[in-house]
Length: 338
Image (cartoon, rainbow, N blue to C red; front, side):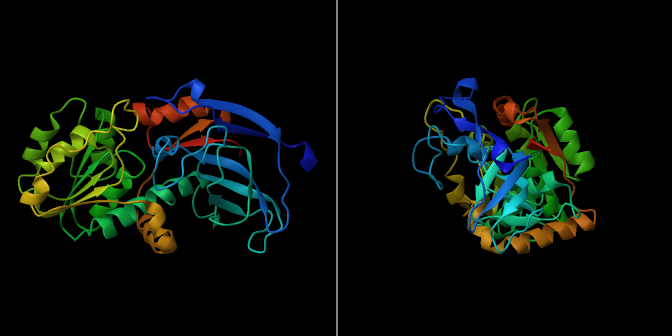
C-alpha cells in the first residue's frame, strides 16, 4: 500500500461538554495520513490510553496543560509502531509511546516519544503499570507522599489504573493498605488479588464509619483520586503528620456546578498534616527510575496489572464515559490495530 493512500481516522473535539460527554462532544473525521519529513517519524497508533485527566483537558480555562481546542485532534497517550523515520533516534519498526493523539497515524518530531519493548511486556501495559499511571503512583506515593515503611495508607479509586498500583507499591514497603472502590467485585479484586489489607465499598458502606473501624490510629498517607465526599471522610481520620496526595478528583470532573472543596480541611491544622497536588509530567526526567522500580516489582511477582481493552477508534465516545461510570475493570485502553 502506498503511503499516500493511507487514511487517517481521528477523534476531534466538536464542542466543550457540560457535565458528562456524549456523542455531540466528538467528531470522527478522516483525512490522508501524513508523511514523515526531515527530523520526523510517522507512527501507526496501536493502542490508545483513556484516562480521567482527559476530561480536564477539554475544559476551557487555566490548567497544567493548555486545553484541547475545539476542532483539534483529542490529546491522548498512545503506543504505536514507527512506519517511517527521518529521525536519528528512531527506526522503522520501533515501538514507541507518547502523546500521539486519538488517531490512527501520528506525525512526531520525537519530543516526548519513548521506545518500548513488546518482548518485556504487552504493549497496553506501557499505557498502564509501565506508563503514566505507574509513574503517577510511584512518584506520587514515594516523593509527594513521602511514604515510610510500615505506615497506614489509604487509597481512593483503588481499583483504577493508578490506585491499584499505589496499593501494591505500599504493600511492598510493608505498609497496611486500605482501598476505597465501588462495588463488591472491585473490592474483592483489591483484597484477594492485589493483597490490600481491607477494602471499603463506597456504594454500599458508610465510608467514614468504616474508616473509623479500620484505621483507629489514623491514616499516614492518603492517596486521593476521587475528591468530594471521599476526601472529606478521609480528612476525619488523619494521623498526626499525615500527608495527602491530590492526584485527581474524578467525582468532580463532570460537575455542572463549581468544584466542591473539602469541608473538613481544618483537620490539616489539628493533625499538622499536609495536602499537596501532583502532576506526573513534573517527574518525567526521572521516569527511568520509576520504570525500573516498577519492572523490578513485577519480576518479583509483587506488582500485578490488568487492562480493559475496547476495540476500535469509533468506540471512543462510549469507552471514554466508562471511566466515569466505573464500568471498566482495570486500565482502560482502546485498541486501534494489532
